[in-house]
Length: 245
Image (tube, rainbow, N blue to C red; front, side, top):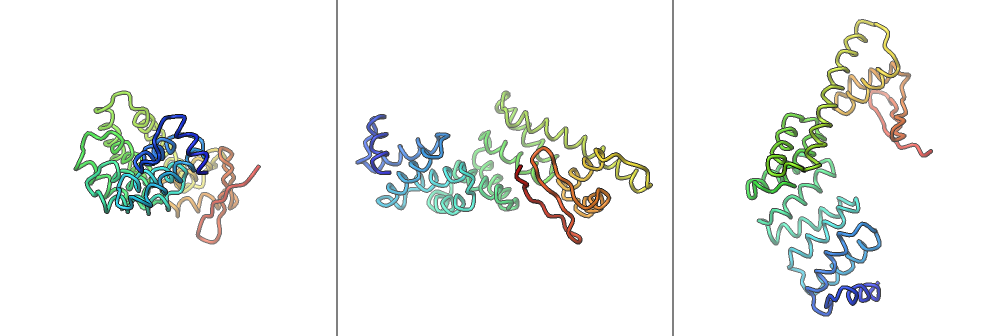
């Protein structure tokens, strides 16, 4: 791995004999799409941190790479180290919030998004990520507010535009699901398609008691054809597993 890193450093004329050259190269490689480059970026940053363990940038970039690779647990540990060294850095605060959000720790995530925005109210990524965090929790009013704020700062922001569109769809689905639920309570016939829509809507909205009742009507299990997620009723709880094709 060291030889590969040296080869790339020569290609881009980055002096990795200088520790900060390692930092620059590690951050650069971490932004690349290929996992191999990300792993090289991690190696470079860890080498940098051996000589500069008090560098918040080193820990921050390491955490961001792991977050981009889907390892939010590991990312969180590195970002917490960066935050301890530079608690006022809004980019680290947002990255820390992102890690908590990915782990489903929304209370902590919201705390850090609010902290970042109090420090840097014009930071667009903080608003879009806050919107996404609220969307995941089903807090559509606050998600809308965050996405709209992002669009006032960046009128072409793709994440905010898509987020608002998704909220509209979810709200329409929720409204339809509630109507279907009333039909079920009246014991009126409902199509399998409408049952599936009602179940997944209630499940996403964390209305698990209602979701379980709908799933029971569907026979106790349902395979979502969009992503091959299998939902099964086990007692009073709903289990989810991915089924390989």
